[in-house]
Amino acid sequence: MQSGAPESIDEYIAASAPKVRAILKKIRSTIHRAAPAAQETISYRIPAFTLHGALVYFAAFKEHIGFYPPVRGDPAIEKAVARYAGEKGNLRFPLDEPIPYDLIEHIVRYRVKQNEAKAAVKRAKKRSAMSPTSRPGRKAAQRFAIAPANRSLEFVKALRRIASPSAIPEVARFFHPDPNGHSDDNEILGVRIGSVFPVAKKFADLTLEEIEVLLDSAYYEVRMGAVSIMDFQARARRTPAEHRKALFTLYLRRHDRINNWDLVDRAAPHVIGGYLADKKRDVLYDLARSKNPWARRTAIVSTYYFIRANDLDDTFKIAALLAEDDHELVQKAVGSWLREAGKKDTKRLVAFLKVHARAMPRPMLRYAVEKLAPEVRTRYL
Image 1: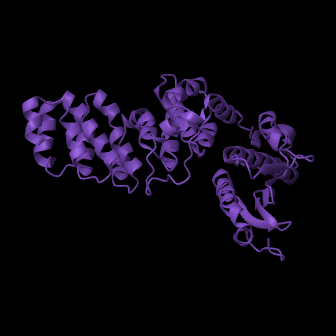
Image 2: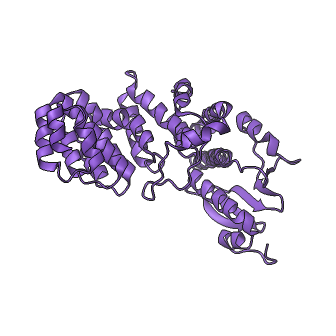
């Protein structure tokens, strides 16, 4: 480390030992993801983030990464960090072990809640002091406090209990990174995807905030759990209209974390399609024009909800927009959904093929004609 105090986190990382620079960069990005409103600074000569006061600090040492301040007030997180805690409660992540980035995310999110709650109390006190005729006291302050979300961490712990290193190669085969699909930080926990769903079912009542914590995880299987919970909630008849809208909004707002074909397929039909069933569907056409292949896949996959209701217009219109798409996993989705629409109206599928078949990529065309009569299939293949 340089002898003078660094003026920025960039300077601190650049002056650190080469072996820890990537770790420091990832910790920094993890903090930004968990607390996007936080500001970077240097305090006590080490990297720090502020949000309504000091949020977190981190530093590189010869054998560990230090993370501060001590975590207090949440039994679940305190238990999770116990193995890393030093004498004063500050955390030490050994450099000869995997850095627990998902745990760092939870810590930062919890610290955000703590700081926001303190700031809310201060605001309430200030309002009380400014208004002598109104004395809101503790109850008013409590209205602004935010209870910490613990169950997202419990969900991750439940997946870790069934994870196996031997499953990592098998699970990794399902993930297809794409430079336009926000896939740069993906990691595999080692939980077979079929085993994620029963765990997600047990956590189907997570709040939107807790679901977003899961979406922010670098672990593919954790994000699969998040979209599965969103799907369970969107399918439930008792889910109120305002919550369905909130799920729809969350999906679109965090599409950067719904970054694989099966994450899209797990949630888009009911979270997006189900919500739009009785509404304008312009957003699907915006998604179909996106550079992000998973957004384009969402556009077509969402129409499955409409197909089931014999509402085929949007499926064929969006398929026409994507008929020459260059991404194989978008091609296969378009072909599959054309096939499903064709089961409802074969003549309309054949009419679509007469216009678009020559331009359609081979995988798309093969999937689209799969259920047509043999003599019709051979005409196109």
